Length: 457
Image (cartoon, rainbow, N blue to C red):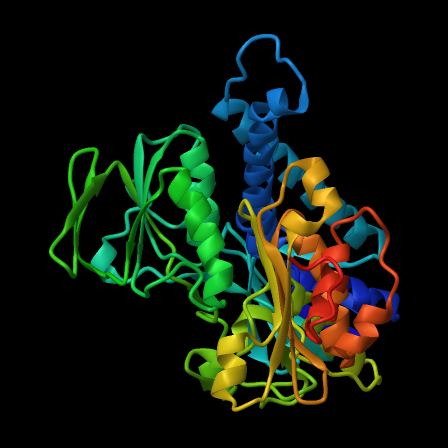
């Protein structure tokens, strides 16, 4: 079996590795760098930045732990920038090594479909090569949404891609969009000393999460002196010499050195040849069935080009599902337990449905909640902000959960397993959790569903 994959991001390269493991001959086409947006311009570099900011926070709090610092701690953005590059390079090199080890043939060029059994690769010098193949997987990811209103120039009006390439810090920045990208960049740049204003059309940060979750982050960022303009949109953008001015729908004006537009991403399907081959597309996304197969025989699509959550781990799972079906195994992706993570301080992580969604669906739900202030380990490490919340249905099954606080993104794995397997709050509460750990808050929240949390106060 010969499989050709267009796109080397977390969907494409994982699919390539899985296919090679299962015995296929694999050809992978990547236009830019292996690892895609996640590794090069998204998940990894932003978290590398945020980890530096988190360590700096810890150093500033050291005297409270009885540690006297010799001299004042200072930030060196140039070195932070270099470290980010080093982390990304090491991981990209690791992906390259794995693909080479599995004997995956990698093409550095732009892929497009000639037919359902042929992929054309266009190299940077204009030369082309056609790969004859048995199956094709489209994994070309997504690109930032940049409406003409914002007069994007890649210098003063930028997307997250350009924000990660800034080698010097601007004095001020307007961030349009209070979602995950806007909050992560907003908090990082503020901690680096940049004056930050966030404009969000809806009335809260992270509007897809429950208010009690987003309010903790909003309160924290307000203390850090991030300015918020919530429930307001951008009406006009004027790019001047060294500054950008935004007029809001309320008539207010904001001026900053740069404006970062983070209002979402769209599927990257341009120039693939979908229309010519009659591959079904709805609202800009490729239509697939539960096996990830498109409307064209022997062509599959995964990740951000299909109508599923724009998340690296979803793309990777879909890549595995597509390959397993191609190789004769029956496989499908389940989306009721997709984890969502925000790497701010405090971290925010959630899975399943929110309280708002449960109410909208008419579910007779219950919640259990436990704050980290009641956990010994949280007191020990000096991070008592936040809580764990568990949402159950009429049968006590856990249908949603959220964690806001230290190490929330790591703690979420246990709750994701519960939602995935349909475990009950009683099941979770019966598990002995180690002491002293932050995970005890999960156990206590499960007990609280039935008003039986021993340490509730």
